[in-house]
Amino acid sequence: MSKVKFEKIKRPEKIGLPFMLDFYPLQDEKNTRISQFFKNLKQGHLTTTKCKKCRKLLWPPRIVCPECLSENLEWVDLGVEGELYAFTEIRLGAPLGFVEDVPFCVGIVKIGSLLISTRIDDAKYEELKIGDKVRLKVVELPDRRVFYRFYKTKEQ
Ligand SMILES: [Zn+2]
Figure 1: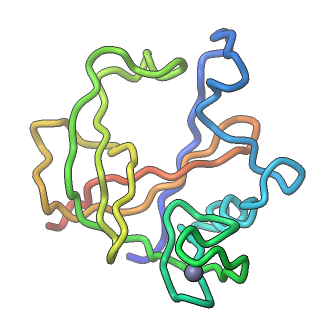
Figure 2: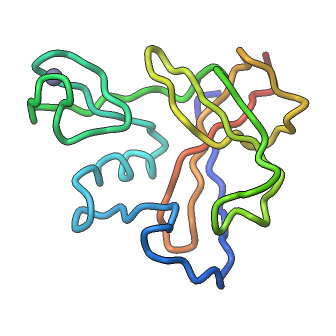
Figure 3: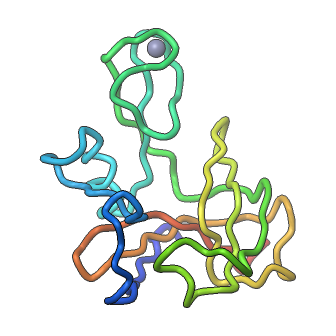
């Protein structure tokens, strides 16, 4: 079971988002210097940058190492499996565009030395526990922008 799950998602047509509150970032080369992250994600790979000078693994992906200020970074694949480090359920106060999804779970997933904030899909709060194995899922908006989420795997 190595294939990554992809899911088409929608967001409400009318949320009148102020641009800065659009949860999904602009992902092309014209708008971000980490466009490679989104290109990789579209292929089912969760990646980040690692500093080639001081070897620090960075999350979120960066264009400059915050440790040594080097711009000499490389892309590394984080794999598709992680462990649930912390989680909670959103019942109120969901961000714009997510109100219809309430209740849903969010959490922190541990992959190696990294702690990644993410939505946790396909499980109710009561079904989750710290240490659960979770797996990468790529969600895609109608305009082709993608983002990562995780979901609890059946085999624990
Ligand atoms: Zn560095």
